[in-house]
Length: 154
Image (tube, rainbow, N blue to C red):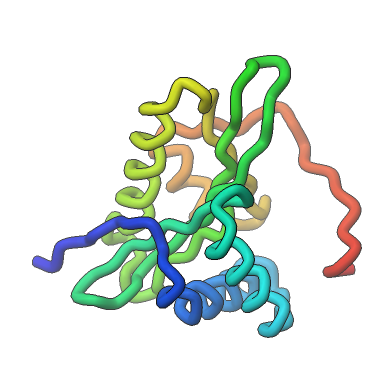
């Protein structure tokens, strides 16, 4: 059995993370993202941990999953929510516990910090498989709707 290693991403992971982000957007939202823009965005996050972090799941030296974390300050809780974003698991490794390993790693890291008040993520309403996975891991649908004005993907 191949061991799954979860670790913080490094600069050498950039190409694989970009590929995962492009594939995820096309698969889940039918959006063909601009590769140069995604590449620059991934590079910016990898270079500046104040913006967020990527974590990757690796098996036999190959990346098989990823997620990004970004931050949101909550004045109501005097703490920081960690937002899980850019989740991707290689299609041939889905159902093998890859996301669960990533999630457990992040959940444990969050619980070790007094400043973190919770985890959040958003998921496309049509992505029922992902929603089911997130709920099985203990996440709950909230009463909030997500609203936005997007200046780049209009």
